[in-house]
Length: 227
Image 1 (spheres, rainbow, N blue to C red):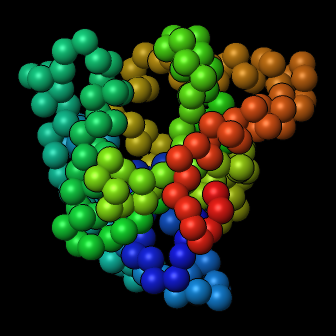
Image 2: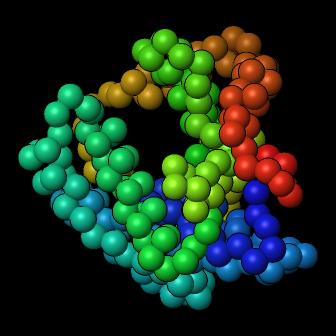
């Protein structure tokens, strides 16, 4: 996923997953046999329930170049959102702002912190509610073909990232989604379903990973590094 000379912009919300990705890639940058650049970006939706401003001190401590982009997403959603859920509207807004920032500052890679549990939940939502066999991609190009999007944690379980965040004393912002904590979502229902299944069948995620690999690798940019 990471190639010599890459300029990587890491999406950091302040949650355990994105902070774990930031610290992992920061460590990898110092010890990897290849040279690449790192920076981070946070989209502040300007919600009263979510304050990501403490992340600025984190980036200063790490010495990571940082882009703090403010956008009144909740206000925009109330004016422009139609049939979509808030989560879908917010996701598109955030992704568009990240793409725009990456392109403005000549980053060729955007790194996202989703993990195997996220991919499994997305797969079930797509199958149950969308009638498609689909999930998040591990490594793909944007529509314009000028930005690679990578998810380095696609083989990592959420519990592993939670444990890492605790052991590394990461300054996690717990409520890092401004609306999703207010009511149950489809994703939370899928998470509960998978937890019940895994309790009965401990190899559930190992089996799901075999199912998901062809879907997460679909469209992977080649060469020189395989997904």
